Image: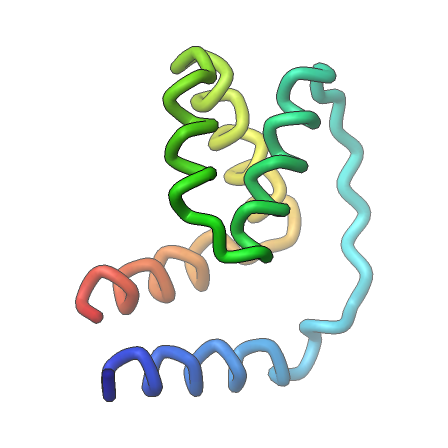
Length: 95
């Protein structure tokens, strides 16, 4: 429980860091399947419906899941947040 609290504080600190409110222009072309999947994944995550998310991802072809992951990585790269995201992810694995 304490590790989740620490991770929450880390996220809170990162989101308040200078420059995090700067606008990043991301010009991408994504197919409608990926947009629909992204919307569903975000909605499930926000609503904390992890069971629904797992069911959704089981129904989606692996190629589409990989396209969504590539889209997320592209967005992070264009925003200059790839390294920061990797470090935060490593904290989540340890928690």
